[in-house]
Amino acid sequence: MDRLQAMRVFVTVVDLGSQSAAADHLDLSRPVVSRYLAELEDWVGARLMHRTTRKLSLTAAGSETLPRCRQMLELSCDMQAAVSEPDDTPRGLVRLSVSTSFGQAQLAEAMAEYVKRYPQVTIDLQMLDRTVNLVDERIDLAIRTSNDLDPNLIARHLTVCRSVICASPAYLLEHPQPQRVEELAGHNCLTHSYFGKSLWHFEEDGEPVSVPVHGNISANEASTLLRVTLAGAGVAMLPTYQAGDYIRSGQLIRLLPHAEPRQMNMYAVYASRKHMPQALRSLLDFLVLRFPPQPQWDAGLDVR
Image (tube, rainbow, N blue to C red):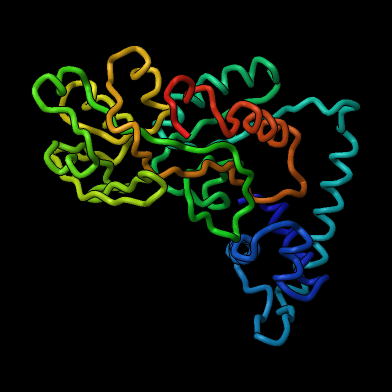
C-alpha cells in the first residue's frame, strides 16, 4: 500500500466531507478512494470514520490520526522539495502489468527502447493473463484489451487489437481451406479459454456474424495457441500483433480475409492523474506514440 497516498486520501475526504468529492479532487475513482481508506484503517488498526448516508464523522482514533497524517504529508512535501532535481529527467521504478502474449510479442522490445532513452528508469514487467488490482498489487500501469472498460478506471487509449483467422500450410495440406465463416464448423478450431471458446464473432459485408466453433485444444494464453497453430494442430483466431510476422513470412496462412474478427481496444490504465511521477508520465507518452491506431504489426495484412 502507498501509505502516503492513503493518508492524502484520508485528509482530503475529511476536508471535503465526502468520498465522492475527494475522488473528484484527487482524480481517483470512488472504489480506489474506498480501498485506500480501508487499507489505512487496517494499517492503523482502528476504524477512522463513521460512514453514514448523510455525512462522515471521525471516530476517536480518526481524530488522533488526522493531525499526524497532516504532519506526515507536510514532511513528505518538505523532503521532496529538499531533494528535488532542477530538471525533469524521468527516474525511478515503474511496475507495469501486461498479458504474456503482448508482452512477449511487442512490449519487451518497446521497453528495451524506452530504457535506452531514459536510463534512470527501471521497468518491472509483470506478465499476467488476468485483470490486476492496481492498488492491491502495487501496479503503476496496466495494459488492458477490452471493449467494455470499467468507467471508474482512469485510462488512456493506445491502439486497436485486430485479429485474423489463420492456419499452418501443413494443416491446409490435409484440410480444405474454408471459403465461408460457416465452414469453420468443419475444422479443428483452437480456442482461447476466456475469449471465444465456443463462438467466434465477425463482421462480414458490414453485418455482424457469429459462428459456433469447436476443437480439441484450448489454452488460457495466446502464445500457446500460436505454437500449436504453427505445429499444424488446427485453425486459430490470433491477434495480429502476434501472428503478423508469421503470416508475412509464410509460416501461417491467413484465412477468410473478407470476414473481420471483432476488434478490441487497448488501453493503458493507471490509478491517478495527479501526483504522477515523471517516469510514469513519460512512459505513457512513449506508449501512445509506439502503439498508434494503425500499428506497424498490421502492415501488409490488409486489415481495417
